[in-house]
Image 1 (cartoon, helix red, strand yellow):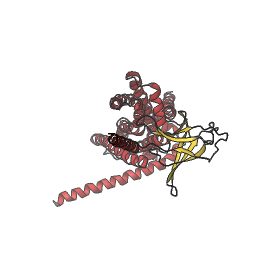
Image 2 (cartoon, chains in turn purple, blue):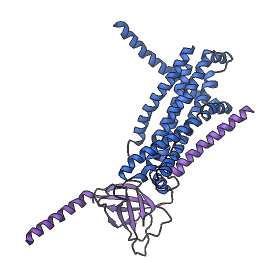
Image 3 (cartoon, chains in turn blue, brown):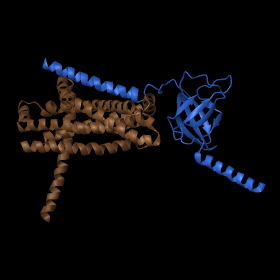
Image 4 (tube, one colour):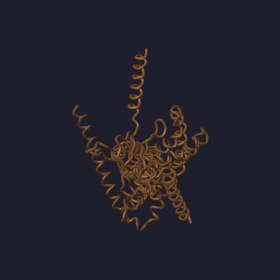
Length: 160
Length: 260
């Protein structure tokens, strides 16, 4: 009888441990999310990808529809080649969809935002997104701002 | 001068010798695992004393560690207006580091010391020699099931620690400090990866479980069979386990998260 109590306690212990692992998988991690094998992949070329990383989200209208699976570099054109994995239910993206690199929040992570075009044709597995917009690099932005300010200064002096 | 040099050399040789004995013991224990398949009740009994009895301390410690992480994390993150990432911070630090490491330290204190004392007393009261007299191999009959039980229960306890800790963190963060509930969990899910974070934590806890149990069993088996010897062996178990866990944690972290 005593032995049965011990077995019961051990069984409960193991079950609770497994439940905790399951909780970590489902609630804390994102196992339920994006590891499906039916995803189809698209590629896009960017002049500058900024801080984009593998596993960065791909969003359309703010909804996560896939993720970045690979980032390569083209030695001929000096462009970054990014491979996107899109979930199978989003298979109606027009062929002239624009891919841009955005930042979520001021200091947040970077993601790829897709903007639908108007083409009748849809994108299929292995297709390339022709229209892309590179990441905005803060230093370049500040540089441009300074130059335009300097230009204004020159104009003002010329006016007087 | 010569004497102290000789003493130093003897200590070094003794250390290497006990490392050798420990390795041989581990080999024998691993070889003894096969015959446990036919007698699972031995393992169940040890799982009870090693795992189930450590349950309460792990749950309570996990809850409070998670709550402290919630408080401290909120204090730092709110300076940068990034309270929403509190969930990520709590979950990542628990799953990756604190879960396996603190559980292993508690496990060494709670279960490891008990194992050492038990085996050491068995040796001191000549129960182990008694088993040998009856042609029962004490390594297979006594040590092997204890080793398997420690190896199995550590990942369970670590997962439990992490899960309860995340819950404690949400209790403080969402309940007490008013972080947005949706943001807390959504950011956590977006940034914690199953393979990279959770599974690596599980691997860590498996390694820690094996090492802590190994140290505890060896110290007990190798103890000088007097009451003083057993007490010293118990102390050594806790100290060596803590060293081994913290050093291995660095090595494992460097291996797992080094190249990103």
